[in-house]
Length: 179
Image (cartoon, rainbow, N blue to C red; front, side, top):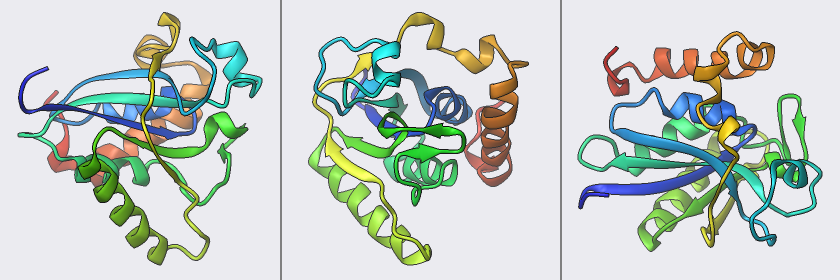
């Protein structure tokens, strides 16, 4: 990492979808799908899916602060999932699919808290996004990394990841990587 590179960690449903959306953004150096927010060391996908670990499916975004801000990442994150749905996104149900921001610093905590409070004013239903310090991030198994890129015709990806990518492309045109 360089002096201007930071990490941000978000969970908003299936990590395949969040990863694909975040990878569209200029200034995002890498996105890693993984697990965080639970109590089990070295969780597996199967254990997380069964709800045995307390972890959420998350992505860790490495980004260049000289190109994209944490505020902008939050804006994209919240635009690509429903933060009022408790422990679910679309067809994915369980605490592993909860909306969560895991902060890496006091600045991220303050920024995310203010963003969530402002967002809560915009919604009729309460925003249920959790805000917690990141304790440990566990990268998911290799077959989960870059899943949409590797499986663009997968039915789940077409139904759930593709619409998020399209939303990012439409709504955040000035923040997109050049093709």
